[in-house]
Each structure stands twice: as C-alpha cells, then as structure tokens.
Length: 292
Image (cartoon, rainbow, N blue to C red; front, side, top):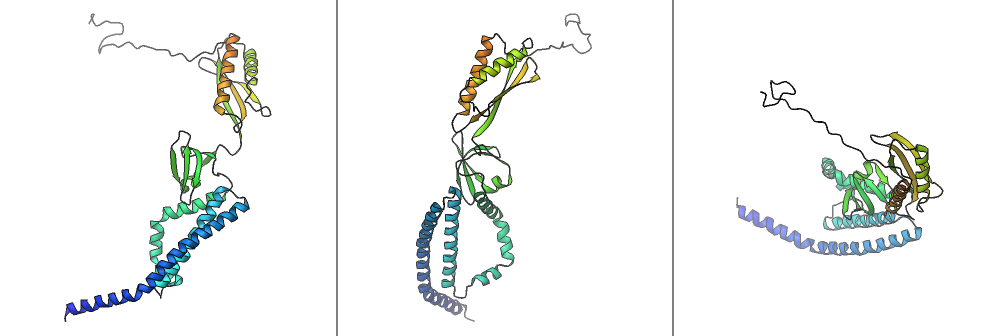
C-alpha cells in the first residue's frame, strides 16, 4: 500500500473541498458584515422605542443588549447554515447531548450572572444612580450589564460586582427614599439636672435649619453609662436638599455650645490602672528582693 499516494489524494480532496467552499465562505463573511449592520440598526430602533416609552435607563440598556444578542444569534445560525449545508438548529441541539451538560457546568457562573442581570434590571428597586451597600461595598450604581454591576464608591474607586452576588445577598438602598433618620449619643455628668439637660438639648437641636420640620427630632434619656448619663438624639433630614454631614456637624456644634453655656459637663470615659505586685517565686507578698 502506497501511503504517500493515499496522503496525496486526501490532501488534494481537502484542497478541492476548500476551493468549493470559497463561495460559501465569501457569502458567510458578507452575512457577518450584514449582521453587524443590522445589529446597529436594530439597537438604534430599540433605543428610540425605549426613549418614547419613558422607561428606566437600565431597562433601556437591557432591551438594546437583548436586541443585539438576538440579531447576532440569527446571523451566526445563518453563517453556519451557509458554510455547513447540512447544519440545522434542531440537529445542533440534538447533537449536543451530554456535551450540553458539560458546557452548562463550565459556564455556570456566566449563565447565573446573565440571568441575575436580567432579573436585576426588571425589578423596580436598585436603579442607576442609587446609593447602595452590598456585601461591604457601598457607593453609586453607575452601570448594570448582563454580567456585572459597576459601583462607584464614595471614596472614588470603581468596584465591579458580579450580578449573582447582588441578586442573592441583601442590598441596602440608601436613596430609595430621600428622608433618612440619623442619631447620636450625648452624655452628661451624673450630677446634672436631667430634665434641664433634656430641655437644653431639645432647644439646641430645634435651632438646626437642616432638620425636616414635619418629621422633626427626638431627645430621650437612654441609659446609665460608665461615666455619664446618655441621651439619644434623633432627627430626620431630606438628603436631596441637605448634606447629612453638614446637618450632623451643626447638631453637634449647637448641642456642645448650648451645654457649655448652661455649665453642663460632657464627661469623657476615664481609665483606671491597677497594679499587681510581682513576688519572686517562694517569697511572701510584701517581702523585698533585698530581704531574700
């Protein structure tokens, strides 16, 4: 048996088959180019339709992304049909068999994040621009894709969080409502007239302009501390109209100035030190080393 002739015949057959496929390959390239053009056109149409529908920005992005994915899936199927004439979608699905299970396990995280991204975009809460905290990451939601969420932290860093992490874990949405309540603890010395101190603190908080007048503020005697009797001071602010840091700064300043004017002391925790006598082994307490 002449192996060289067999190899030569096989190579010639492959070359002939490749030459015969050149027109199909050229048509497939044209289909890919047309798919890219059609994808852009359809995304533009989806963008215009979603703008007219006045829906959320994340839902607009979802509609445009899904439109692009569908167009490219159809284009790739057409390309496969042109290059491989016997290819059919049903045959491809049937031929996957056990391989589909293996692919599913291999791309489990990708599929999970993809589905989580779709569900996150469809739900009402957590939109673009919201202030959130998820799994120790807090900041502003800048972008939601089908795989990940971009969170700009308050310190300036951009953190990319997988969608499955946000979907499966609790998420605090600070900007869900503009009104938020804040609180601090204020301690006064034990010899203070508590009724007078409460009136003074209440008057001081009431002079802060940033506090919401409808929801107001509260001052309660809370507990006996280590070196003081503590008051709980709570107030509401509109975070869209006022800075929470500025309002808290003003509350602390007013309370401190008012208590100082009334001669009421704000004690600080004191530390007591106890010393234990170190006795050499075999000696009685109080015996010096010289006595040994």
